[in-house]
Image (cartoon, rainbow, N blue to C red; front, side):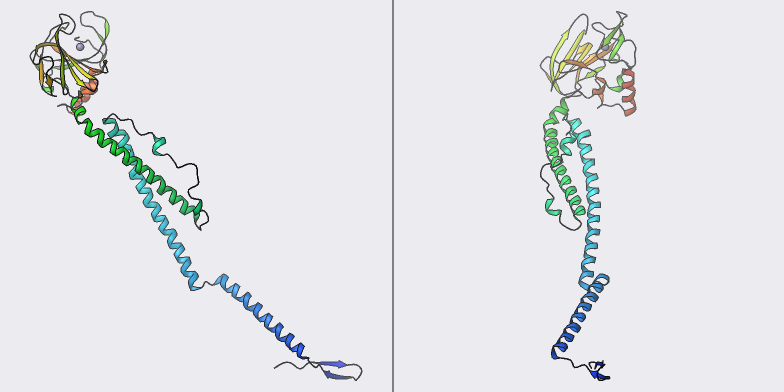
Amino acid sequence: MAKVKYYYDTKTLNYQRIEKTPLDRVKNILIYLGVSVFSGVIITIVLIQFLNSPNEKRLIKEKSDLISQYDILKQNLNEIDLVLQDMQNRDDNIYRVILEADPIPSSIRKAGFGGVNRYKHLENMSNADLIIETSKQIDVISKQLYIQSKSFDEVIELAKNNKKKLASLPSIQPLSNKDLKRMVSGWGYRMHPTLKIKKFHYGLDFTASTGTPIYATGNGTVEKVKYTRFGYGKHIIINHGYEYKTLYAHLSEYNVKKGEKVTRGQVIGFVGNTGRSVAPHLHYEVLKNGKKVNPAPYCYNNDLSIEEYDKMIKLSSKENQSFD
Ligand SMILES: [Zn+2]
């Protein structure tokens, strides 16, 4: 009920009732409504600040779930990245080395996208950093995977084509280990047996009894079967193709003819002491592109154990006298 208001009339010395006009009443109602609406809005704002509606609660939970899922996704991506790096290392350091292909430069493997900002459309999203970072990682992995897959195509093709090459390259010791007396002299400067001066020795000398079988160290064609009184004595040159040749010197007898096709492990001749030689031995040379190279690394695929091979490599690098 509205309050009745009075005022003190100094003329009549009495309290007089204040009569409200309809306009006053309307004003009062409007003020009352205004204050109510205003208070309501303030209270609602305060409540919204401290209390979330069920809808908001659901959205907040969804957001936190999404962030957790992104974190899991990121961990998975990191694991995929590690597997990919391992594949890239094996590709560059094993497969491509065996097949004599150049490693893929890391500038190509790790090449970015450059130029335009591919992630501009993501920048206005909430949690943009997380989404952009993850998108970038997926893009980089996808690109590296594509390069790796292309590389494997090339490696498979090389391996197919190199089946013949791998069979042709010199890769065994020319004498069986059981027939060896010792690997006397290797690649490098050695005291010459007859000249008694230090001369560069361009091959490996293996001592063995006269008549010990000598094996072709890779598939190829006999290019030369020749006797010289000095120097190599009775010797054979095999052309393996792929710019590789091998030379076997100081033989007692030949077991092949010029032009004959030979396969790895085939007996091509026998150890002797012909030419400039101080004792029965095999002088073995490997030529790549016409240049003599150290044959020791080309003896890896034979009946030597790893220790024996290691010993052979050590012996071949020991400074001593060559048998020439
Ligand atoms: Zn020699």
